[in-house]
Image 1 (tube, rainbow, N blue to C red):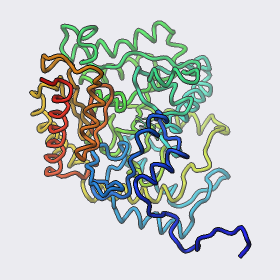
Image 2 (cartoon, rainbow, N blue to C red; image 1 turned 60 degrees about the vertical axis):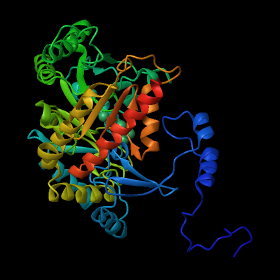
Image 3 (cartoon, rainbow, N blue to C red; image 1 turned 90 degrees about the vertical axis):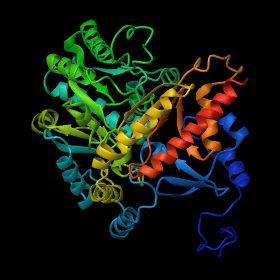
Length: 472
Ligand code: PMP
């Protein structure tokens, strides 16, 4: 042993037991968390999650927490699925990595491409793999512009997206996204990405939606796309991108008239339709793909999260024939790819995950059982004085908190969403706040009993929020 060799035996696990306070100190010293006010977090101390099982996770203090966000909309099959562990272990032993660049593949990558093509609607027969949703959406920007170049229409560069959309955090994906706070940092969006408003009935209740039914508003909101196309010129538009249900923007379930009208407008102008299925894909809305729930026929679909249930990172773009044929037949080399495109361990885990979704009949359960049951149970909260509206689609739901529901003065300095989120955590529930809109997207394996437990915890959090925000 040399003088500067590590002072601990190498057979010790690298994961060392420490108290919550010790983890918090180490974390504050070294870990810059995503989407975090670092100074505020350091002052408060990070929450340390150590294990998970089913729909629950546990923290370093041994507290059990109901994870109604499935991690970050991704742990669709729940925690502790041994089949996924086995798939990863087996693939790591056999071949932990090989690339897909130099006219090479690995069995899991090609098998997953074949499997995804079989699961996707008919025109999709090809997939381009990435490691995340952001990279998938970056790929879309490259791909749609390449497509129009190949078709001899290089002026078609502009991609239209929506305000408050979330498509990821890389430069291109954050540009596609419509989050003002993200655009304000780093000079975004990049050129030729523009935004229209979102089909958010409640947010537009005093404006564009005033006096309209949901269906009427859906048509109005879709026609914002037509207005934007007219403003820019149809010959300059490459694609429109949208999440079937906007997730991080607040689980905004569009009126039923919205997507068919968007489809009509895209068809009319020959514009590519991109469905961001990163949240909605793999059963979240009760179908394999969110576009199937809303009846659109996209040309590209991006995915990540649920494809592996978050056990390992993987993403990609499903490419329909129209685009794939241009790429393959007219293409030459597409100058784009990632070291981990088609990572064999991630693809092996994805295959095991898809098996599990099928074996447990999760998608039908969401569509016919747990999804409708969540809607029914959450509807009971609509009478709560803190609630302005409840919306859900499959296993994603939003509860819009109301500022004046209790008709009392709100306590000074209270942000309703943040207050509610705090009460959730304190009572063992993870629910996310988007402004004053509380959102849930639990693992797809949850049972009816667990729906009852989740709704009970939400009710408790609403009561506590009301007591704090509207004291007597
Ligand atoms: N698209 C959507 C709809 C998302 O919700 C997200 C992440 N929440 C992304 C893309 C980005 O995915 P990732 O964080 O894996 O890059």
